[in-house]
Image 1 (tube, rainbow, N blue to C red):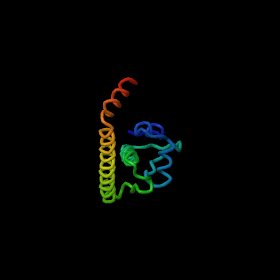
Image 2: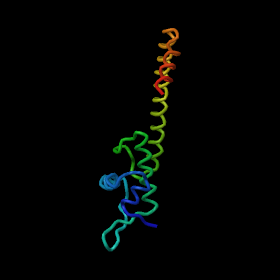
Image 3: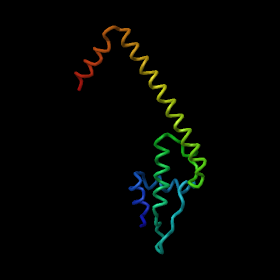
Length: 121
């Protein structure tokens, strides 16, 4: 099975421009070209593109995404992402606790906030 650039982008949930950019910077392997010069992408390209997109969605800068053939770096990258996510969760939980403490200090403020939120729905 082979796909055009547009079809590959649609399958991976990204844009044609993103696919072309990933080629330019070496993150996505160049596909074979047909006699007409059109690119023909295969399943390995789709896997690469989904991998890139998944890392980008998790906040990994493009410059830090290793080429596909560097799987040992990929594992290290995933561990770093996991650590970053854990730190973000910790910060959010702390912020939530502080907001709850401020609401509690106001007395019945939490109930008022819930009433206001319910009224605006």
